[in-house]
Image (cartoon, rainbow, N blue to C red):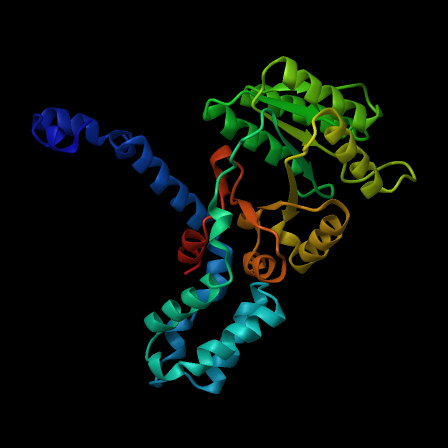
Length: 333
């Protein structure tokens, strides 16, 4: 409903609508934009508390940043898991312009500026589907939220009008197949599954085959995070990768690595291992709402040449968001 038209309605109508949620009066774009930022800010509460608590107190009785205050800042950045190297770089840059930072407001502005400089603007781009079906192989160790991430991505694409298929290629864990099947039903996606302990590469091959015959737009391929055999995990996933390319040259078009933010710097080590073996093209960082170590986002973007594409800040489908550096930094402070 148009806002100005609403203003002209009777007081009775306004009173009755006052009990309803006002966002329903907004355009879908405005509602979505405000809602996503609110979710992001809420999800980063624990990290924000670490970074901003007592920043105002730093300037009590002082006019400029001194060494003691810089050390306190350094400790907070490291506690938030921004990494020692990145933290030292940020503190050095803040120190060089301390004469222009007379209060906590200016300090927050300077921190935002320096942290934002670590992000590549290209990470804000949505998936550009030029090939149909567009195949995304999703990888990561068990427990990072891989299956849930696939389900949420499938829901996002379905809501955009895309025809989605999920490949249940984590055949070594029975629960994984059941979980992904539930997500497929919730998200409106088709699913291709084999029996437990089936060859994951065969599932991947059949999934792309089915996607082509059913004219699907996008395929999400779930993969194992741990095997119950002596076969090397990376070799098994490489086999899936080769099989996808055999059925559809150029596939997978994306290798999306899912990382758990609560693991902090261990997530960096995982990223390096998977990237060396598979050539990771993008990262999804989950569970940011469950940790005060949200600074790991900065570490990932500063130390890895892999775009951070998605961040998870809650359990709802809408809580898996395309990473927007400016909104992320704004939500941190």
